Length: 352
Image 1 (cartoon, rainbow, N blue to C red):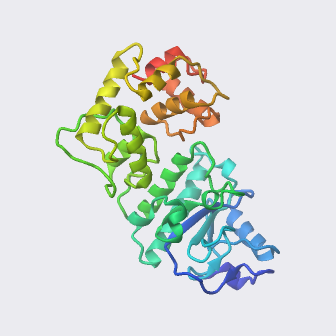
Image 2: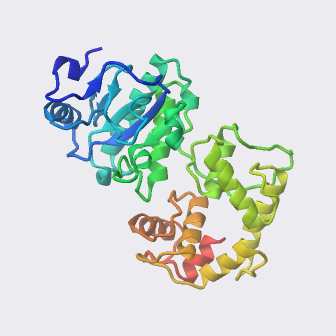
Image 3: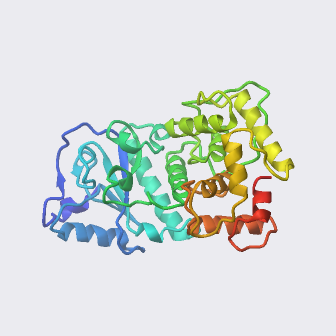
C-alpha cells in the first residue's frame, strides 16, 4: 500500500513512526470540515502535507476515493485530547458535517467508503468487525470500537456528526456499512413494529445482538445498531423505571408485557391518566403545542414517540430542523395536516 505522507513528506511533523501505547483497535471518526466532493480526500491530503500545524489522519475518504496517509502502526495527530493519538486509528470524511444528508447519495457513498476502510482496518489487525462496529466513546483508547472526534475532544470539536440532531441515523449507517464490507450479517434497513408480548420467556441483555435488539433500541430511543451495549442497558433501565417495573436493564417477559400494555393503553384512551411519573409527564406533554424552537421534556417525549415509530431522532428535548422534518414526515404518513406542529391531532396519532 502506498502512503501519501511517506510519498509527500509534510512541511511540519504530522506523524510519529511508532506508538507510545499498543494499538487498541479503537477508531476515531472525523469530518475534515472542508469542501466536499469527488476530490475532497486528495485535496485534504495535499493540505495536510503543506500545513504548518499538527493535524492528520491514517485515512481520508470522499465520495469515490480513499487516500491512505500513513501505516496503521504510525501515530497520527487527529485528536488534541491526551491518549487517543497513541492508541487509536484515525479516519476522516472529506466533507463538512453540516453538509451530510441521509437522503443524499453522496453522503451514502462517503459513509459506505468510510465503512469499507474501517472494515479493512479491522481485518488487517485481526479485529472482529462485529465487536468493533459499535460506538464506545472514550473507551476507544482501551478496546475496539468507534468514537466521534466531537465526543472525545468535546471542548472544542463538533465533528464528525457528533452534534447533529439526526446523529443516530448516521451512526447506524456507518455500523451497517462496516458490517456489510466485513461480510458480517448486514442488518439492513430497520423498520420498527409495535412491541408484542413475550410469551416464550426469552430475555435480552448485555451481549445480545440482532433484530430484536434493534426493536428494543427503537422503543427506548437509542442508536439502532443491534448490539445490546451499555447505552442500551441504561436506556432500558430508564424505560423500566418509567413503566414502574424492576429496573434491572434486561428486556424480558415482564418488561415486554408492560410495554405492550402501555402501547395498548395509549392507543385506546383519548387522554392519559397519570399512574406514574412518566404517564404524568406524557399527559402534561400532550397538553402542549410543540413547534420549531420549543424545548423541554414535552419535546423529548415527542421525540421518543417518533423514535418508537421509526423516525430516528436524538431525544434531546430541542425541537430543531430534524424534529420538524420528522414531524412533517409522520404527519404525511398518517394523513394529518402537514405543518410541523405537534398539536392535539398529531399527539392523538403519535400515542396510538
